Length: 388
Image (tube, rainbow, N blue to C red; front, side, top):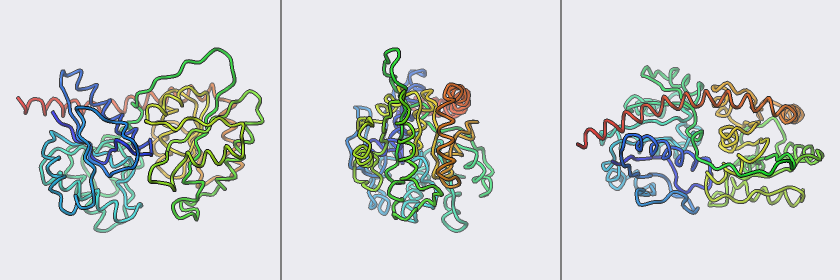
């Protein structure tokens, strides 16, 4: 059978977006294997300038162009091949905050699927915000026509209810909690390995260069304070970990930012420029403590049991982690530099207790994803029966 994955990516230089795709396929493959089924995939997404980390004989890659949404014949041909389609909205793009172009493209693709009468599942993602108006009306019309609706946090669930959706909502969590990884072997003893993910986007002040996200911290100064603080600890080995890599998104490139910082602080260890989301998570899983502003970098730490302090620049952080009962996120839009640094110090010094909090909250994540997985199991079973 064929499963469509729309608004996923097989080669995004933002490894968080790629993590959603790899994790989604891992979930479906595991369920299909249990059911004795064979699955092929059609991945439908915007094109990216980065090497593909998802390929195979059972994978068809369809790079959507703007023209495919104006004249959707090519898109419709792929949709018609699918038994059902999973739409993850690139994690957080089912909203109007990224401008009219992106949400129009996303909504157009959804209505192509609805017109084809193919089951559409809104996989766990951030929903909203939308300002009242026609765009929100169209968005909610698509939600109502979807076969199943899953959010990844309570804030998104609340948004859908406030927007008038009365159907069933599965409140799950981010599918990247299921991202496969291999923990590196560690020799006994040695220094405490601390990881810091620096957002190149925040270092540049957002796409506008003018504090686009309304941070209350001085982010570049905060990063330098964190580095100085940890370098003063003789037991620590500090690693800079990029999670958005060079592609065609120079404003977002963490790796370039890391190289600039390493030139200023030469004792830092630069993590490799990873070629896949699982490679990044495997590296992060070998650390003893982690902090970062890329949400999926912090999810990689959290879901591999590493004590972590997420550094939030949007509501999606607190929504995701708070829904799981993990309240160690520091809000870069509400706190000052000194308070953020103090909470990071507190987390590091109490990292053993923090690891226990991570384990307890991950249990909540696991239970929430099992509800989503049960729905996918039912869809696979149903699709298999129709093919007989």
